[in-house]
Structure formats: C-alpha cells, structure tokens
Image 1 (cartoon, rainbow, N blue to C red):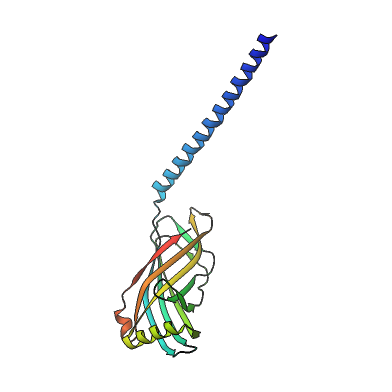
Image 2: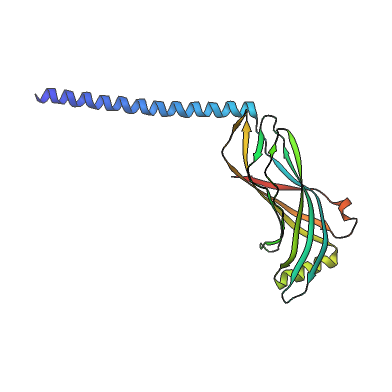
Length: 212
C-alpha cells in the first residue's frame, strides 16, 4: 500500500507540473502574439505625434490698473494650428478644447485670460485644422508684483505669455476608436508685440504636447 500511495502522489505532482507548464507556455505565447500584433500595427500605421502651433497672437485693449487691488484688462486673439500628420489615424476631440493664456515668472503661473472653449470636433487624417481663439481678461485681479511686471512689459512694448491647451481625444484607425486620452499642450514663450503692426512680424511658436 505505501508504494501505491507514493505512485499516486507522484502522478498527481506530475499532473500539476504539466498544468503549470501549460499555463506558462500559454502566457508566453499570448505575450509573443501581443508583441507581434503591436509590431504589425506600428509597421502598417506608423503613428506620428500630433503638433500644436500658435501661428498668430495679437493683444488689444491691454491695460493695468495700479496697486493696490490691481487688475488687468486685455483681449487676446490667437490662432492655434493642430496638425495631424498621420495618413491612417484620424482624431475625435470628445470634449471642448480649453485654451488659457498664462503669465508668470520664477515658476509661478497666473491665468491671465481664459479663451472660450472650442467645441469638440473630428479631425481627418493628414489634416491641419486652425482654431481661432478669443481669450479675454476683464478686470482680472492680479498680485501687486505681477501688476508691476505687466506695467514694465507694457512700457517695453512686448508681452510674453504661455498658452496652455487641454483636450480629450480618441484616435480612430479603420473605424475603431481608441480609449480616451488626455492631451496637454504648452506653448512657451509666446511673445506678443503691442504695436499695431506687431501682428505682421509674429513668429509662430511650437508647443510641447503630452498625451496621457
């Protein structure tokens, strides 16, 4: 009897080992298949990063009330070019595209003006879409130090700001949409001349784009 029990135990152990080996082999095979699918997808689609560029920036009615209780009034007119260079990937902007004009130094940021959120839209593959934006600061309160910096910029004839872009997007390949991604773009520095003729000499500013 002891010999028989030992044989049954050894048989059960061998069965468990075989099952574990099958599971490990199946996992490895799934990893290899997933890798091959990803490689084939990349070779076929060849995804390229999307690009944001501020192509126009003008400020009108810019004035600063002095401290204490300093405020800023300004209207920013911006053109934001969104370039989708992909030949097989289109994009669907699910939410409105939020655009903000920021001002700040030494690592601090102040929302100087908020643009009207641009409604969501579909962008075809291999397409560049330009969004016109009007961002308004209307009696926006600012710290006294920031007010003094803005007055200095006004006297110098040039205002340097950052433009922030936040959007939610899905990528579409062959009619199949991806999961929801968050796009965050930062365009800096955007130097805006304050003279009436400054718009003609504006240099386009590319943006850093992160997708998460």
